[in-house]
Length: 140
Length: 405
Ligand SMILES: Cc1ncc(COP(=O)(O)O)c(C=O)c1O
Image (cartoon, rainbow over the protein chains, first blue to last red):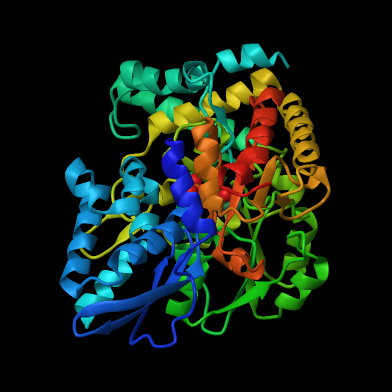
């Protein structure tokens, strides 16, 4: 992460995550793993009436995997399922360097992971939480 | 050793003078002579070795066989019949598992250590599954070394193969191969030595060690990628069936059956990597030019230098031995609170190349109760300055990851 401002945002979510905890009332749980590097998270969501009412994650891994999951939850809690899935697709496009600047703004702090698009080895880390969420919501 | 002059021999080190390449256990950089030898083969010697009767093909054959002789001499094998060229250590081990595995029977046992690289592990695991053999695990000490007791505990009168690395690619420890080969032989087993990390960095003499097989890769010892070696005692190679079938490895073919070419060609099916072999020979010549003992001395010196700096950084934890001389230039480490991938990424932004991950040794990682580590590995052409830069960068990591101190 060459840009130190982005680095700070990521560090902050990694060291002081808002959503890294258990979630007792969750009705969806899924574990996501990157076998090659050992990132391992368990994502829990409370989804009612097609709205993501609450969410949390536990696990461990590199700063990017952990911060990305935290920033994702910041963004999707309170959104409908479809909105959350749209954000996932947008995030995925950003990581593939296919999203416009305007679009990236919609990702708020998760947009700070744009640099990962130049770091192929870290793509899996950045999308781990997102992919897990999309698997959960689509599998529902 | 005039290290400035030595670095001049390595085009990549010259091109990127500002990066510190500390991933030599993964692959080494190549001296000019090696690159030139491969190029020269294609420019001046190229024809299909062993096939044509015309002069150019004969020259290609000669240079390929000369390379084999140079490898034989380097590891002190008795005969060039015992030197089989493969793509790399991994292919050599697969050849062994498939071919020697054919000679084993249900219930036979293969003993492997928990520190092995996946390539000295999965081929055995899979042949064991196919043929109903049993894998016996040789456990390691805290520093990663294998004790005589652990070896003896894992072998029985059904043990047919003991497979062990000479130097661990994760911890750098060296096993007493000579002693363990003897123990394996006393139990009636053959001994397979993974020399991928040892042949490039210490004297390996197959006669002295009395191993039955030794494997290594050219690219980890200054040579090109795509050329590797399987050394095997002639008496075993003779009784092993071929691994791959096709051109060059046959003697006589009819519609019904075929007979096999003599050693080592029986195990070299298809067109060989003559340019790669030529490059490997140039690498061996380069070792000789610098003097292998000078290389070893320099690497031991750098290894101690690195250990002494790293051990004084409080947040850095070096895995394995606390004795610098046990590391052979290989340091797996963690940094408190910083994931290995983040370590490698930040070091990379400072121009320092280290590896992060499980290093193809997941069984060892499980044994050490970790998912991954970062690893720095040194070669003689590294400098004190590079190691100091690496250590400096390491001591800024926690701050850059957002920790207060
Ligand atoms: C100890 C050990 N064995 C085997 C190998 C496999 O080498 P290669 O990938 O060249 O086949 C390696 C290198 O990665 C190694 O370090």
